[in-house]
Image (cartoon, rainbow, N blue to C red; front, side, top):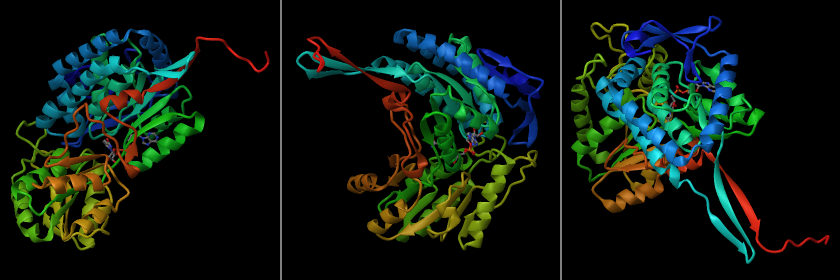
Length: 494
Ligand code: NAD
């Protein structure tokens, strides 16, 4: 399969190094979000196919775990090189899958995954245990053993990058993976799986099964899965957790939603603050888990800040995501567009003021695409749905504050705790807020970067378990303790 062949292709499963199709599978259409037209058909994995994928992964994992770490590292580094070589092809697939501008997918999406594979490949040999003195003649050591077969379940907003973020620490730690991409965006993971095998990754180590909730549930309940690494919404995350505990006690990492506060402190350079707020709200058409959608501006600065945002929103280049000058594409699906437009309607009904946007868009040549205007609301208050709930679309809510105490209480008054940030010139304020705001990551004078060496994890209902950083690898291992008696063994029965 390559990008050219994909159009109207029938996408099957990737099991044990091969694409498998079945005449018995139910098929669903893969839609291009920019045109609303079908570009491929996807087969939902049969239970027997999921079983085969898990069996292949089990066999491959046993050998992989015995492969010397240096060799595992070499293979993963080769895989990263080959993925990088295919950057443009994978970026095109990602744009077709998600509707994200090619400008971003070529620079961010694939590169962000490759950097995590390289990071995990480079540190896997540092995955060691400890030697622990016990008494004079006894000592102990701990060793880290791979968990086994991991189920990776991904969301649709960064489909290929999410696949790489999950497979990199899992494979580096000696595990194998069966990955289920979102049914909305199945293209990238399949091509990625092929490239990994071309790079020399043993067959069966990374398998892809397609489908929606039904396939996801089957994976979560499967007794041969040791851990689920999940990215998606909070309600699904809760269900994954319950299912994962039902048949066997699986380990779980949950990367869930957010409603992150972006604080513009009263001393902020408002032009810089507006640029940061634009990135925090409109990058990827706002379909980013860490979007900073609650923008807190000091009351005295609200009007000037709004003017700067209006000017920038007017200049966003909206259009065909395949055109390199486009910076803002459609939403991912008709369903998501309707969901986001319903939030916009609720904002209007609850009395928020539309500063700009607020309507669907009909672009010439892309009339059936899922486009909407980048939308900014002011005069928001904390009880509005647009302020309380995750929208996952290009909708910014501007809130005003007057004191630091009030600001901290309101910023933390949410079930979410994924990200937060401040724009300020005052270091004391920046670090006070970093310490007070409940979030897994806190950005000071920037927004959105997640370098591979930096652990990321949600707080509160935004999830738990680490992605990136060395702890991400540790989470794919189990710790074994070994106790050694070098002296006499004493028994109470002797
Ligand atoms: P979703 O929860 O609807 O689906 C996520 C995945 O779970 C999909 O692959 C889906 O098919 C599968 N699934 C659905 N029901 C299931 C079930 N009962 N059992 C097992 N699997 C099931 O989420 P989405 O709409 O694809 O993605 C958007 C959400 O993802 C947003 O809430 C966003 O914040 C979150 N997200 C979080 C992060 C993060 O790192 N924290 C990153 C990206 C997206």
